[in-house]
Length: 425
Ligand code: AMP
Ligand code: GLY
Image 1 (cartoon, rainbow, N blue to C red):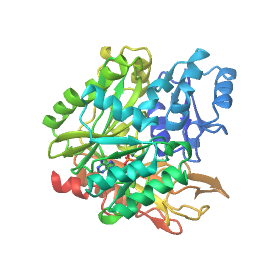
Image 2: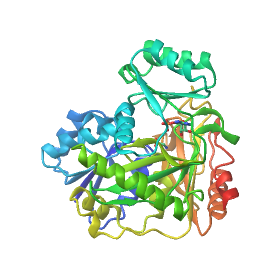
Image 3: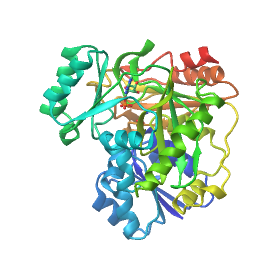
Image 4: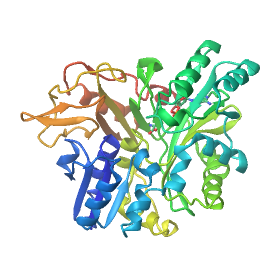
């Protein structure tokens, strides 16, 4: 079969490297991909958000199956478009992708169906929002843009001035465009965070191994929020008892709620959870695989990913047994100095072989190009260095040993990925 993966980051590289192992796939394409992905699949210069271009290419080239990985094309309806010309997909249709595309939608869904989440209120006027925050008088206050905002639409305001600033830039300066027409103001929750990705065909839900992201740029959870500086799996805070509770109170009710709303969700549903003193609560839903969570979850998968994706698309996930490897995985993100703010690109990367890989780790390329015979940096997050081992400390030791053999000008990575997880073991 000819399979197309849409997207270009470390997550897409992890998807491509898993799919490549499927005996059913004869040709694998990725659009737009990157220099590392090009070692594993044929890359095409079509932007992930170019729905017309992508659909036309898939039709002309008789693609048998498409995997739409990023949030924007999903929310824009790429799956609907592919399906309308007879190409089956892995990923939700637009009417289900709204679970990530609109926080106003997802919060009201949770409220309607009694799914545990932070208390909240919705505003379309910044003055009303600020009055509400002032009347509550409890800080930090959490302000979220309704729509997609490149993962940057959440502000944890420590006082009234910060809340006013956030409301001003989101709702008046419109730094995230129309995504800031409405905001959600919600209660600040505390507790360990867990990411759970789950396969679902709209009826059956199969959670993947749990994971933990590290969103801040610097060691000790300091610095700005990023797309994610590293991940580990499984997440030791996510015990069997917590997993059972999440399945009963959050995962199955969500799948059910989406069906009842006439929006069956098919694809990977991401639950961003906080294990609060009052039980697990949903911080956010994503309509897709998490990045970089995918870079630790898929290496632990022991079932053919493509078989699972086909089963999801054909709504027969219940017939399949999804198996996981024993042990743990760690992924350390190697980034450009300055990320998530401004940084330079184009530096040659040393420590990779001609396939962009290493013997001692699996390398997922997030932002790389190829120039003058060398892989070069081409983004904020550059590489994800993943290792699996019997235990988390061993996996981390291997990831860091490999990271130390990789270099480029202004290289930056966190030195404490997995530290809180290891302390919890
Ligand atoms: P998001 O972009 O929705 O993943 O949010 C970014 C981060 O903000 C989350 O990973 C949490 O650490 C934090 N966050 C979001 N909502 C809340 C909340 N209600 N209480 C505390 N922290 C939150
Ligand atoms: N790692 C968080 C996300 O993919 O949104």
